[in-house]
Length: 394
Image (cartoon, rainbow, N blue to C red; front, top):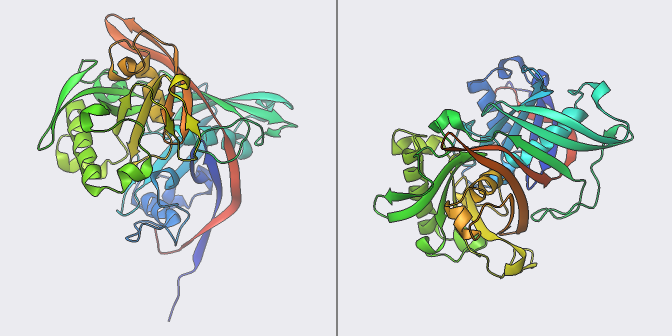
């Protein structure tokens, strides 16, 4: 009986922010996977271990959560004034598809660091000691991200004392700038409905106030109290309740339709990565998942967000951009939860702790625009070498 050999593919397993994924250089992929299509999707699903009816990813590199079922491709940039092109694939856990509809803000941190590790940044731009500014073209959404990566002795500094809630150990701080993060191609404006707040009708569920925004990643914000929550919930409070998860999905689908991201409800099954659904509330004191006490006086608001159908253990980086942007615009639900005004930065509480994010927003010809959003994350290589997949898997 003939057996198919495994194929070795150079890869790096990295944590970026509160996510982790498998990073590849485009040139290292098998030739048929160097272009978008079925072969690439099949390869990434096999690398991660999807689709997995056991939701365990035992036979792959994934971690069976939305935060750990990710693949990244980097290459020298095709865009002027950029160092690298960064393409991100969110691999479904129990279904056979890869969602390419949005970015991962957390792994954007890893993209900056990996670009240097992988030799994709001009060596003349890397200082012996200091900070290397990596100019990233986010190819999924056609946006620029600037990563300020610390360098020590000519190499990426990965260890340090920067602490990020949702990550167990401290590391070196990487500052990210998301330039012009509003996704105007999808909806025509940062607020696709033309309103800061809408009445969102969800068939069979009810009508809720909602802020729908396309900054960082398309996101539907609702008030926690309107859907029966406090805003202090942890993962187990939401993810252990299939009926509530189904209700969140109905709200998400209604928002996607209203934002023009999909034309029929059925399309949402193949677009699980976007939009995100999040709920906000005014500050309250609560115990984070680590046991750390988050005082109401230490945060401006509380936010919980779902990713790929489950409550995220911390906060997606792109959703943090949406939070910072919406908070900066008077009248949105996020802004109102934070006490109103026009803050340039907010600190919000999430299930694992808190995070500060800033945004520069202004009105131009009566329309709100955001010039950039800024936040700090960290990244670290966990393993490097080769991943192996059966030769007939793709």
